[in-house]
Length: 487
Image 1: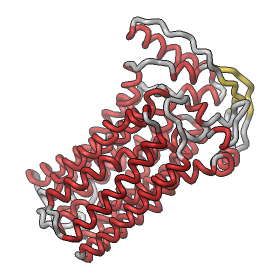
Image 2: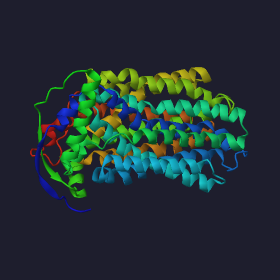
Image 3: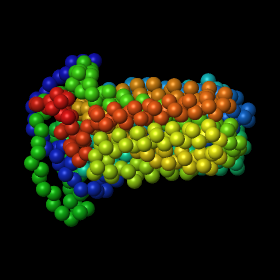
Image 4: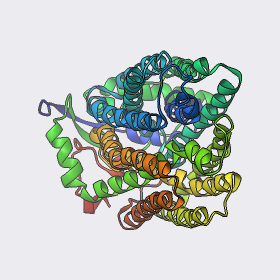
């Protein structure tokens, strides 16, 4: 990578102007235009689980075995990890908008071609590139959202958007049921993937109207464009509310740079903020293992241990998805009021403890399909809010110039450790047909969540209602502090 190229020194109120805005139509545009990536991800992951029985039945036209269906889930996650890493640095270098249009285009192409699969190799390759598009979306989207949403709403908005994954999961579960029940097996699962293309195209139409991040613009020597965008938003807000906006007093002085070298980025993550790096890694490993391990094997556990039929099993995902969405939606405001540290710690530890208890009930054989699903709903009501807070954390606690790359890095590393090993391990545990073996995986998932909660109790940053520049000064700011000073 090239070294940093300094352009000049400016003082700007753009961050303060964005953070003092009341909620408006513009912010809904950001939510619907950018946040819907999580719905797409939830749809993709759930569809594979929902149609797993058909894909492995010999009637699908791709001749997958049960273990290969789970392997496809792991391949999707590998693609997402590499996509997040690959697109993270270009997002910080070339802008949020360019990359979130490119990554959505990659997703649309790959998921459409998944529906045309005729053999396992093609299916695996397309799942990889679908995951790569979604992983790239994480880097571009989360950074853009946090830079456009006012500080006082950032926690609840981030958690609700991340929780919308489960709206996609719900659509995938219901769509999978109807497609497999009323359509021939060869076509039913393909229609489920084709639906992702339709939804993605509608997102693309909305997303065209979302502007580039003004924060990214003024750091990269485009102050005039940043001012133009913010002024336009302010005019729209004043017309919508009928009230004039006051000019904020806070400002920040920046040494503008057209590009920022990778060496400076790496130094900021591992030298300037080592504690925050440990925090991000811990949160991502815990939630990635728990979610990917249990969710990718959800339907197969129901069919193997509780005798639920392949066609009916996807319906058990409906209450599970609802509980997962309600967690971030209802607990999200507490992350802005009670605070990040308390809420991250409590949601991680509580979900881990509840999983340990449920695992013992599972081994004892006192649960049926309905009560097992109900127990999972309670566990993941809290786990979903905790998992969403992992993305919020790594997005807001690192400097703006590194934000997308940090999201991609911690997502990729955490998911590689937890999200790839989890499904592969659980595929073997489920195949054994032994409840004790499967509970070993549940114990491991619970331990990782509890450990991450303990790390958060000591290292989580009190970022609630603070502007991003106060949480982590930009690397180009005149007085970038050390981690101790920032904490």
